[in-house]
Length: 113
Image (cartoon, rainbow, N blue to C red; front, top):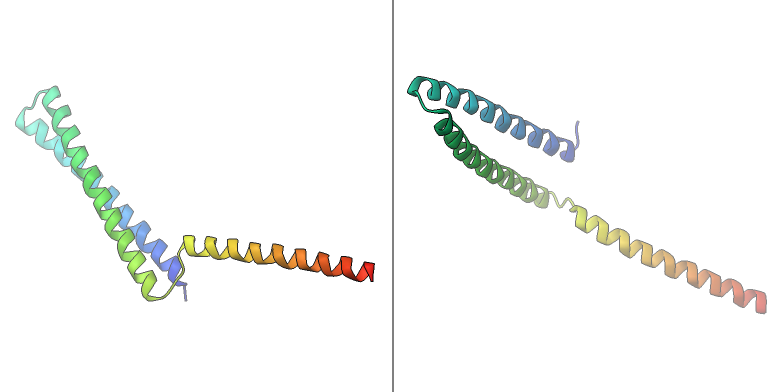
């Protein structure tokens, strides 16, 4: 059974693929409409630019919504975030340094005794 992280990655990948497919289809539809309506090349460029900006904004909103949903789902399973793991790693490194320092002190004490 795949782990939760793999499932989330697959879901994210599928969501992005869906958005990409929608963008490509929208570009095709826009080109057909422009041809049928008899827009000038400048009108087509302007409309395409505005449409592209709206699509980009909507894509960011979808990405943000998916990120939030994944984060909420991960929190329900108490999966630590990357920041949590990095903070824990820093703490472990600090403790390891202190243990090493104490071991060296103990070694010196034994040599002097």
